[in-house]
Length: 298
Image: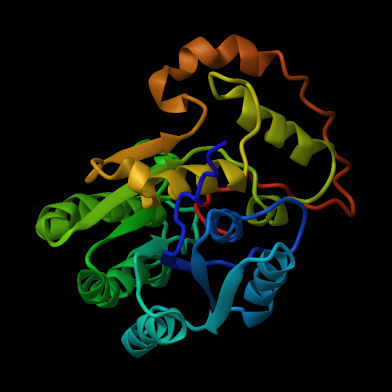
């Protein structure tokens, strides 16, 4: 019997947004870091909140994997440069970068504030730009590598989050240009567009109760498969794209979204109408529920 090596055995990876918002379930960054470690990679866990990355570290180490924590605000160029230096100093080289940081802000082009616009581009696009800027030379030094950018179906469909959508759309454009610019240097660059996945961050913005459960069911029913997605679905896709199994794949966007981009909303109406809507909550003392904006990290 042939023993199969891990899909990213002896590779070194950086995962940004590697912590997870407190709450049930698992975020895409935490799941991706764990999946890469399970497949043999040494992982630098990067998060603005050290305690969240430490939780991911404990999970990886409990399973016998290798990882380290780097806490930083990656909107700062010096922090991004130090992040890459730390990965190389700690593990020897750099082969994989997963740009997973993201934060949505609800608002149209008319009512979104300039501050929210700038913040969205900083968090969702600038962080990926800076991380890649310093990771690419290290990957060239290592003989090549793979960059996986976590975008969103919000880059491809309207949902009332104009700043987030613009930033995630910019990330798709950056993916294609980086694939062109660095392919002959042995670096592949791809993107993932998650759909209506359920993560702790998504759950954290809604008040627990029948209305939140209704919206989660609707998220599942909106897809062709009619089943819920979570951070692991993104993690498995990212691990594939990071591995040598995807050695001839670059410059593409892989939707992980239960097929919502493959059907018109009209054709899903019967499934959505079949979900019983809960009775209105009492006005006094009840939390106001707003449908969660799509998230791509976390």
